[in-house]
Length: 256
Image (cartoon, rainbow, N blue to C red; front, side, top):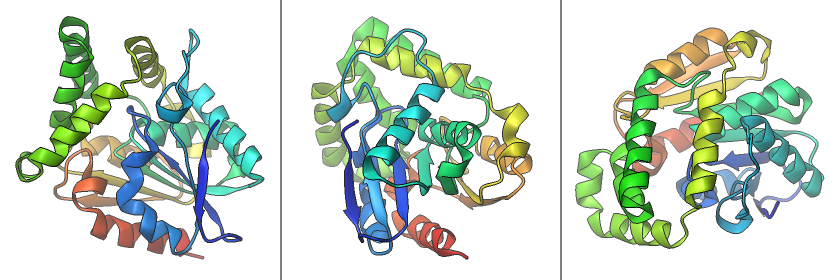
């Protein structure tokens, strides 16, 4: 797995795991803050970006967690903090189930133990757009599920550029459907009580794609978790309003 390590050599490591898009670039608003204190390990998830390749049948969140272990082994890092957005948060939960000794502190952002029916409906709509209108339409619709209307209005040209880039580097229908299938099949509810890593669950109340109550349920199931909520910022509040989250994130990761 191709990956990059930035930040302060010899310090604790933080692994960044993106959501359904799989791109490490999603975490750009967090990178500088993290690099002041930690080694930062970033990678495009298998089947996307710099790790583009056809995914096998039966692809699971477990495969994605094993990829994280592969990256840690290649970097010669035994234990790391883990920051995961949506699907990336599921990867962190699976890492905690499969390889608990490799996980230090855990920050799932707008994630869930089992996908909500509302989120399933959103995925059905997105798949319908992909199948009926193609990748360009799918990528053009993506900001609607990520961002708030005021942000989209204020950053119209920026989003246009992101849509053009996303269309040019689309992960492919087959890979995307396998990744959606993996997150739909994931269910960690029965094992939450066994995940003891200190956890900061972060969510936004106005997330269109994932109800914040899914994060609340995570906190109720995890024995060593706390909930941090922002009132606005949508599914990608880490992009829309990074400063408040970054401050809480760094404080949490530095706790002893």
